[in-house]
Image 1 (tube, rainbow, N blue to C red):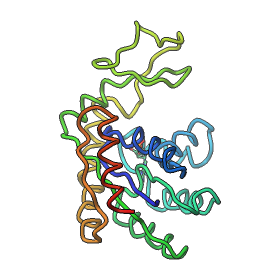
Image 2 (cartoon, protein in one colour; image 1 turned 135 degrees about the vertical axis):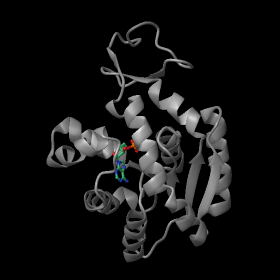
Image 3 (cartoon, rainbow, N blue to C red; image 1 turned 180 degrees about the vertical axis):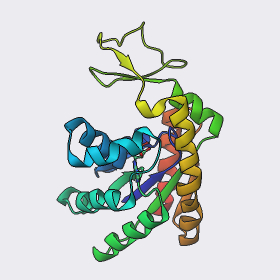
Image 4 (cartoon, protein in one colour; image 1 turned 45 degrees about the horizontal axis):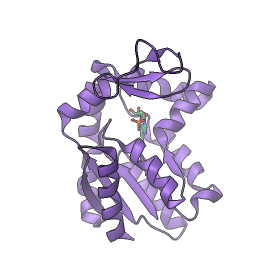
Length: 214
Ligand code: AMP
């Protein structure tokens, strides 16, 4: 299965893509995670990506295409993958389709996780992450035991989850990523899934639509 999970920031792409990857036994490839890992490791890629990410903007297409091209060439991606947060622009979608065509394959499904904007803002701005163990809390519906994580680690807000950056990320999504909805609808590979509610239920909805695509 070669699938793309699309959706606005905080739609639940990361959670759903990780789970799908495990179940389908294919790698979960998240460009956001790759950039965050590069920033943490202090690499040149991290240096290039950091400013864009903290401002809620997209990393330039050439940079993003470079890391995806490299990742899709790995052995573990040859029998399938779940892409999370990529493509995010029309040139990226065109680039992806060229890479796959050069391998003689194509996408099986593009799933758009749909969540209303006021809910996205609540999800992102309430998220807190433990600096020690990486556990993710939400101040409203999954609050930490106190000021710190269960493991004692300090809780932080991801820089790009601040209200100003979330607003900017949503504007970026509308301007640059939403056009992909039409792009993939025309191709006939798009399925829209309701991203509201319990993550288990959203997962079941995704599995249901993927069943129709494979
Ligand atoms: P995510 O974790 O998918 O929300 O991505 C976090 C940030 O990484 C985004 O707000 C962008 O700044 C950057 N990023 C992730 N994926 C892409 C992409 N496909 N194209 C450009 N920038 C990206």
